[in-house]
Amino acid sequence: MKSRRKFLQQAGLLAGAFSANSLFNELHAASLENATRKLAGLTPEAIAADEDYWSVIQSAYTVNSNLIILNNGGVSPAPKVVQEALQRYNDLSNQGPSYYMWRILDQGREPLRYKLSVLAGCSPEEIAVNRNATEALNTVIFGLDLKAGDEVIGTKQDYPNMINAWRQRQERESIVYTQLNFKFPIENDEEIVSAYEKAITPKTKLLHVTHIINWIGQIMPVRKICDMAKKHGLEVIVDGAHSFGLLDFKIPELGCDYFGTSLHKFLSAPVGSGMLWIKKEKIGKIWPLVCNDKPRGEDIRKFETLGTRSFPIEQAIGEAVNFQNGIGSKRKEDRVRYLKNYWASKAKEIPKVKIHTSFKPEYACGICGVSVDGMTPGELDSALLNTYKIHTVGIVWENISCVRVTPHVYTRLQDLDKLVFALEEIAGRKK
Image 1 (cartoon, rainbow, N blue to C red):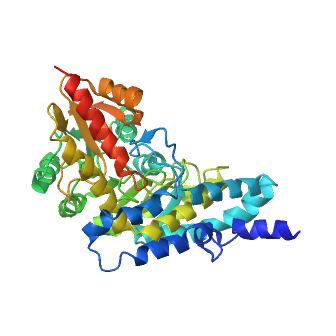
Image 2: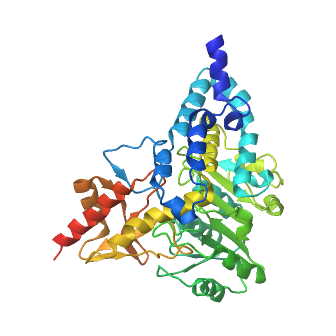
Image 3: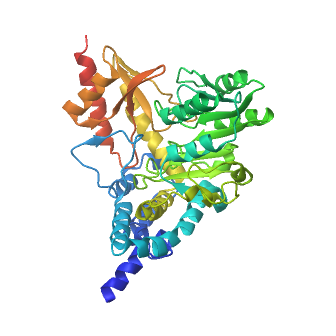
């Protein structure tokens, strides 16, 4: 009974990851606090380059040392504390799922909602917990009341699942879906904002904006686009799949109406976790993607009637939030940008190698595109993986042709040095 009581306490039945007995406090709080004290007096730039500090963060992950993972823009590994939380909640659930999931773990969603809202800088009553950005954004895309002829403006560089959702509404309901076509990188906010504004017609109802273009890492001037949209009486939905947990911002600061993200990317939460934010006064007008007994209600929880899903995954998100807070959002953004610039600034000096992403901090952070003259993205991706054990992803999509490289806080400089070495060797073999 004593060991069982201890297990239940460690699982954090009601307070979950937000109790004094959280796994983060147990495993990482002391070492991170000690490492952080040593940063006193350092500039943000010096902190981003302090390898002693970041080695503490790196040690919290369990990535395979035989494979260099540089596709964190797809999905990121979770630190050990998140993995252990997931395992403990899963073990608890399997002692009696209908009791421990529905009567115990389900009570942890409200503390989780609160902590996510603090990180997002909004009211808990504006946050719904779901499974990924696709689910969050599709909830809004299909939940808006639009009629035949109403127009939505997005871009050809948006994420395919969102593009296809709008196309489905166009095919089924005859809305008008207009796509802008950008050639990135662009280092001029006005060029982007004016492209949206020039496309607006009397039929336009909403703008769809991707915060960070997943293919190539371009940061879009979301606030300026939203300010412009409001002058025209338009709503804005923001795809924040690659920005939340990476960039240091609060969602209301963007000025948008709807925001969806995946938490298993830069936040390093368990795979299959996401979040939907809807401005409080807009909740009632959005139909749930999955049925609810009050579909026009103003309670954000109507978007969580998903049926049986993984309660352990939901609760383990809490430890990812703890880990994020332990580092600090600004410090994390600075480090990941530093890592991108570290390898990309060296790679751009290699003959036949081209960088496809801006070096200016307002236009890019961690995601960066690279290519080698005479090679397709697929060929370069294969060469990096097969010869150097470096995992990236080849991108060929609407004016974009490159290999996407995305480091994370656990990425070591020696791994990025190997990437640069690999690019130099590969480029040197091309005539």
